[in-house]
Image 1 (cartoon, rainbow, N blue to C red):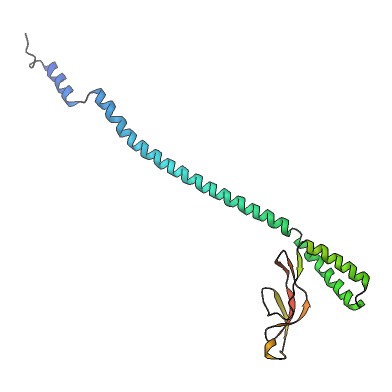
Image 2 (cartoon, rainbow, N blue to C red; image 1 turned 180 degrees about the vertical axis):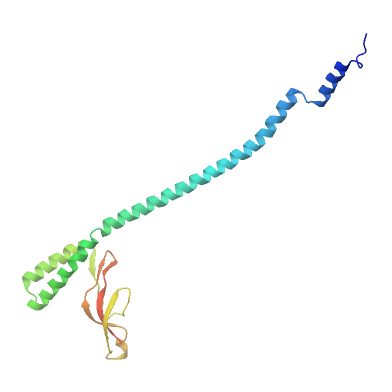
Length: 178
């Protein structure tokens, strides 16, 4: 009978068992090693996707606000070009009133016309006697001031300026004292 330790096949089997881990040990060790990188990758991917979502949502909100503001502005100032084209007619009506000595018929037409335009947001600038403001006035000419208190003031209006919904539609053409 052969001794148990002397059989070479037994020795290999014993060595293999001592050197290699069992299958259950390998199965338990691998998932832990694989799960750690997967969890980190998933967290990173989640953070990336969440960041993309927040940016996209923010971009959409900004787009929505911008388009709503543009729509409101369009509704408010949609008639801007038409009213700007009518301003010379208003100037002609005012000249006609001055030339005819306040004719009642022309006065009625002018008042009705101005009332309709005021309902649409048109407002005339009152600039005579005010300090010159390059944001509202266009200086046509300068004249010497009669006294020191008139320097820098608007002394005459050549062409009226108008606001449409509190935005300058036409700058007032004025004469400024220096």
